[in-house]
Image (cartoon, rainbow, N blue to C red; front, top):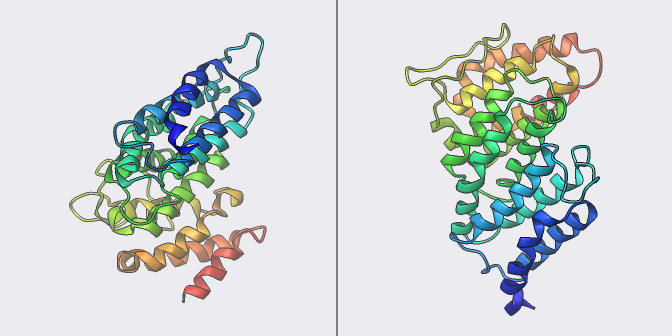
Length: 288
């Protein structure tokens, strides 16, 4: 079927706006399977079109709009669609480097906008699910993450993590930062965010140079918030891997804040009412 995959794909994509429910799930899975038949099917010119069609269908349902069939409920409470689109985007990153870059340059600004859009009761889940899709753009990749992704998606995530108490946003956001520290820590260290304004934590004082705040420095400041004794313990559970990979990948950058970071962890452990933060202590012990 590989020689016919292009023709099959051209027949499937126009059906996306016309389907909903389990039929939409099946159509998206079929599109992903068709793309898998021929890794040369997409290039820098054709990838954005496929990504845009899939993204628009996801956005339509995630924002709570009605499906094409009268009386069909929107899929706002159903995570299946986001999971399928997440897998599809991740599969697109395994195509050629040119196709992968085209995907990121086209989709990253749109996801950043979705993450930053003020929510209503009906769309409160949108930022967390948008971050989930953004993570699919880097999960299967190694080094060489695009600076444009950091400047759009990561910037939006750093911004929303300053204030959000939504556990999905915090979980997927911290996972995103952990991915970047693991895969391209140097890019984060070289990327500066002059207007990043998260308030100083009493437990983790921020230090920066005259250029502003690097991506690594911004993460340190967020750790100050996540490790505050007043912050939800369920929200802070996600920081263990991030701290571990910071020790592994950003050793030199951690020097100026290491004392404050360790004090913040000790104070958080001392005030914890559950075993939530024991994993952080264990990781630091192993790293030491």
